[in-house]
Picture 1: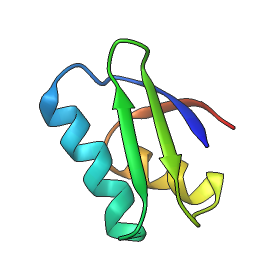
Picture 2: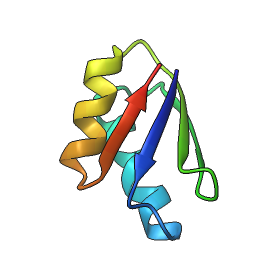
Picture 3: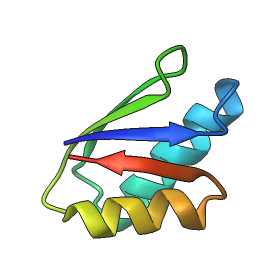
Picture 4: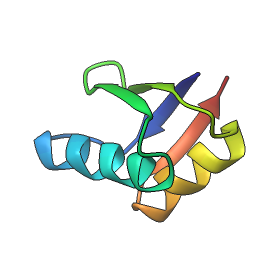
Length: 65
């Protein structure tokens, strides 16, 4: 799944988003592209669960597909 996220700007942001998702699914594969504001997630979590994890970490999700 691909998630468009606002508010990510540094390495700390990458770690925070990755941690938020992997805390909910330890087997999730997470790839953050800061320049594109995109997070690619390979996980058993639903789009709603991934969105909730990112929002709980303090970021704004524009879309998830």
